[in-house]
Length: 556
Ligand SMILES: Nc1ncnc2c1ncn2[C@@H]1O[C@H](COP(=O)(O)OP(=O)(O)O)[C@@H](O)[C@H]1O
Ligand SMILES: O=C(CO)[C@@H](O)[C@@H](O)COP(=O)(O)O
Image 1 (cartoon, helix red, strand yellow):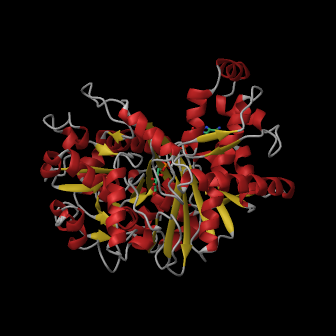
Image 2 (cartoon, rainbow, N blue to C red; image 1 turned 30 degrees about the vertical axis):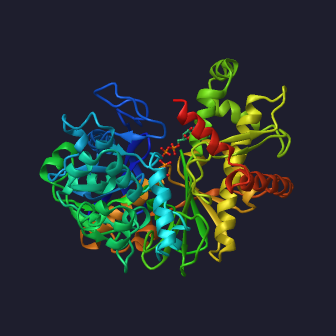
Image 3 (spheres, rainbow, N blue to C red; image 1 turned 180 degrees about the vertical axis):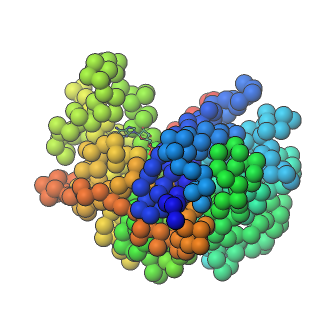
């Protein structure tokens, strides 16, 4: 029998990438990236000059189809693989990235009559403007002692489905009324490929408060939020919730021709990017924390018992690998903070020097920041440039840098920002470990481990744990391709379980990052200071960040 292949498509924050994978050994035969033509829409709506408010982040659903149109044919062409040998396709997505669609599954923002309303567009995971709704959800759930709340670390995030839906209802009731279904973008893209409308258990579980046995929260709870939401889960969130690895359907002839594939191949139900990365890096057992490190970090961990962990994003049975409880925590900005500094914070001479040396600004700063020992900059930062996801779950918190003098250099600030994100991760590792969900080893994947060695050494030193690095540059896409192979099944040349697929297709590099004892000791002290700042600014000691936000809002 000829070799068989699957395609994984990873939908990130700024681009989508397709990877063609050899199912015999997981080799990535070809990959191709399509930057989203409309990128992240956070200032003005397309087709009009309508300005978006603070904390908004939207996307254009057409960009997702564009990724299939450009990147899938590109990997087929580059590899020379016969489309008859591609047996399945899986996708992974940022989440909760959601959109309102009409009865035909058409995004409302593509309707010329509705597109000038920002609420008709895709709300990207980092759309943080539903904080008021999230806070009300948390108050009411707490008052009612809802059983689901502890499963989400005690707080439902404004990034998730119910807060976003409620924001639409509150601010644009006509858009809510015109919505037939609110869909995760992951499920919508799969529906476009297959014509079937299913909801995957991963996004439903982590982002829409769905539980394998209990289903969604009760109508009574939704009614307590807002009487207009009483029937939400049976109407606009309706649809069968199916486990990861399920075959959602078969590629339609129309989409097959757009993507240069054979009609009828198996399409897996969608998955979350970070969750797909777990089998992608070969982790199928507890104790191994997988960090998907990119614009943000998602921390994924398997466990055998349901534990309460402060500020975790959620624990979902079978949410990552069947048979285990899948835990997720995260930091809302990591690479994004470094990008902010590079784009907004560095003086012109740094850019010029980097250009003269033929490296990008990140590399220039990393090189110079590496010359400093831990503690030598005298700086400390709080990594809250995009709020705090875990453990505080508060999008109203903002960034902080302490210790600057007239001698402080850009590379020192860059180093302090790298360290701040490592302290944020340490906080999460400690939260899991101290709640009885063991973290023995760290695995890193995503763009950052490939790009910044200093960052990875700092993470090993700050967490005092060895870090293994994914061999794949596109781990979520590799994981998605594995799920595509599972959807196809062994009869087609794929696999029957994700564990089997991972054992054949996943790899880590030989090179690991090991903690350096002298660095660990200094970082222990700095982490104590980080903790003091964290609790002072994050747990009510001084709410200056929130007051500043309120003053800013009032003066806009
Ligand atoms: N050399 C570098 N060091 C640290 N961060 C970097 C470097 N180069 C790019 N970045 C950051 O990497 C992030 C993109 O990560 P990547 O994993 O490629 O994307 P995504 O999160 O969208 O999947 C950006 O936020 C960017 O600022
Ligand atoms: O929130 C999740 C997963 O739960 C992510 O989709 C989100 O942080 C975006 O991830 P990326 O930074 O684009 O890799």
